[in-house]
Image (cartoon, rainbow, N blue to C red; front, top):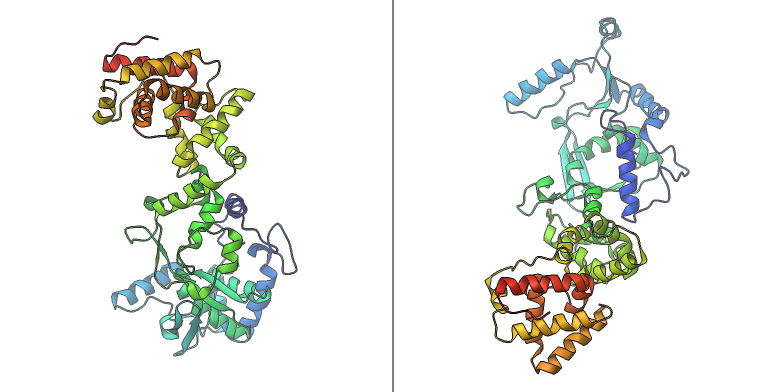
Length: 449
């Protein structure tokens, strides 16, 4: 756990990271909460390990104390930028005498420790994604490895961590590419074996700008709360910048582990396409066992005010609602909107075409027959509604569309939607009759029920 940035690190953020990974099904066999032979696993608990490396760098002349104030460093930075040069530290404190150090300390200055960057060298990185990348040390400047509060910086601490823990490969975002030459210099100064590096391209929004909140939520917790499934999110994220062989895009975590290779990771930025995420998530929703899906969907039904009593009847109704809606959901949060189809007794026609469906000559007969048979039914279940619809077709000798469409529109105001038998079973007898009456009154045909 990289927690050396004391201002930004918190117990809450740590728990958020762990909980998010666990929810996604990504667990670890060594590290924080688990233990292992290379602990401790928080950087702030490893300060004694870092100190040994710091002492060695100071002793060998690869590091030195710097007493320059933040204001002095900022002035130097601005001056270099004004000349069109790369802002960097120019080494004012590189050759301080003991007397100068003592004077600064008597003034109350707290030093940082800087790494002495070798002059006029080329640092080469054989990146597993980007190929060979080179950096000139003259553009770097001596960088800070220990802050004035005694806490190591990221670029120093991760080198010691990875070396101590036997890390062989470092895969991270391309924004870290500029950190890599600094880290390589530290590896070399301490005589440590370097890992292999792979820098993955940035994720962009659909407008090709850097990913931000306006392109979609940026935290795992936010997607979880919206009703995205962990399996779908892992599947979607794995496809950002990596292309499998063939056309298949749906993979379990186990299949991703088996098929993934760095050779198929693209140098080009990946585009975060919310529509694709919704499509993948909808696929997982449709194919999830009903019992598992219900367990995840019930909180959304309760939030929508559809379930209240926790009764056997409600439990059975929840099964039917979820089974009915699952083909129309891109995420479970959609339930709160879709559930409106089953609430209330007033019908609003979605457009004139839907309304005109009820103006056909045979419609009053069909609607009245449906109402009479529903009133006569002992219970309203999908199978009993199916039987009612079948009997109406038989009695009237009308086609399926001539029977089903006007009944659907009279019940929902919409021309498309869930299976009519399931829809009617969810509405129940009282709501069915109330909606049919409401539609009939709006169209102006006679009702005999």
